[in-house]
Image 1: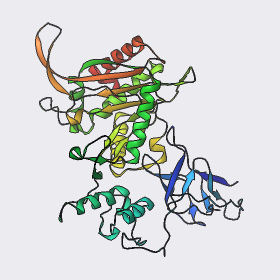
Image 2 (image 1 turned 45 degrees about the vertical axis):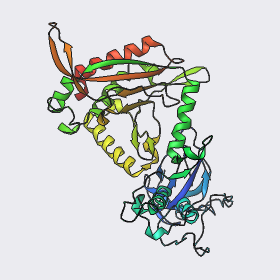
Image 3 (image 1 turned 135 degrees about the vertical axis):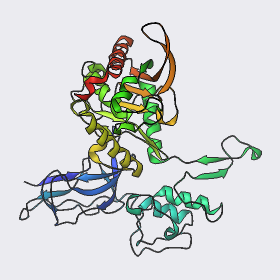
Amino acid sequence: MAVEIYVHKMTEHMATAKVIRWLVKEGDAVVSGQAILEVETEKAVVELEASASGVLKGIRPGVLEGSEVRVGETIAFIAERDESVPALSPLAPTPAQPERQGAPSDRRGTLDTSLRATPVARRVAKELAVELRLVQGTGRDGCIREEDVRAFAALQGRGVGESSKATPKLTPEVGPGATPDTAGAWLELSPTQRTTGRRMLESVRTAPQFVLSTDVDMSRVLAMRGASQQDTRTEDAGGVSITSVVVKATALTLKTHPRLNASYVDGRIWLHEPINVGVAVGGDMGLYVPVVLAADQKALSEIEREIRALQEKARKMHFSEKDLLGGTFTISNLGMHGVDRFAAIINPPQSAILAMGRIRKLPVFNGDDRLVCRPMVTLSLTIDHRVMDGLHGARFLGDLKAILEEPGALLA
């Protein structure tokens, strides 16, 4: 029986995705799990994978580079080689459809289709009088993105020889309410930054949030990792990062505190069975939250491998669809950036988020009331007061602190 191919919903508010390219051709054999299509969402470039093995058939007319498809809309099938599939109606054109080969170019910018560039990058290049062949692409396989074009356009006005690495576009002009002698510059947001801004605004508007904090002695964690306690800046010492340790410890703690692994939905609380921990990863173009699925069931070394792979994907802004799906709790670690403590905003529809600062040596009193120096970290838990009260949050933090200060259970 033929299996439908469609774009899955990868974020709470995702409605459409833009086709980047087909990775296989109609009539090609594919196997389950094989990447078959690249699409661009507001969050990242994502590879869609085949959900079955067979032959790619019946690609919907119009599902080409630059076309926009709706979530859940059938765009092709995987079937047996001699199996027939339904004929799909052509995809309705959208204003974002790309220019096709042979389209006229003008002197304001090139439409050279021999170059790898996203449709938006081609349009912006035309608007800004940028020759695409001169732009260094930072996307997958050197693909030129909108940010590359805008960066190049800005650099053209700053002189020759400067790097064309993607930077935000600054447009000098008079801002709202400004007088001519108070001119400034507009800073354009990436699609990811716009999406994150909308979601965070929704979060603070709809969820009553408050923050609980505790300081944790990380001496035994550092010893377990084989890291030097004389230099707590060496996060990768011992082969396992502090982030991986905290992910594992958090996942184990969530097993006994289900309200923190929950969502508030229409006046009721949905307790998620899987414990899928999202790890916030920031970049110049925005914030991503790839997910470690079933983190409570994985060994510490496995979590470390997954986080490293996800960080590399975030650097390239290129994920598989499963990387961004299913998160039930989020951890944000800014310790490597020198931040001591901070309060994070809940990632809706989750009910809590854990913020982690840097490990720093602080004077503390030990059990004998003697003042000693210990590597301490501040953990700050933001919770949705509709789902739990302060007591739930305090108990969670207390149990998480206990695991991190006696981390033997993390090696099980």
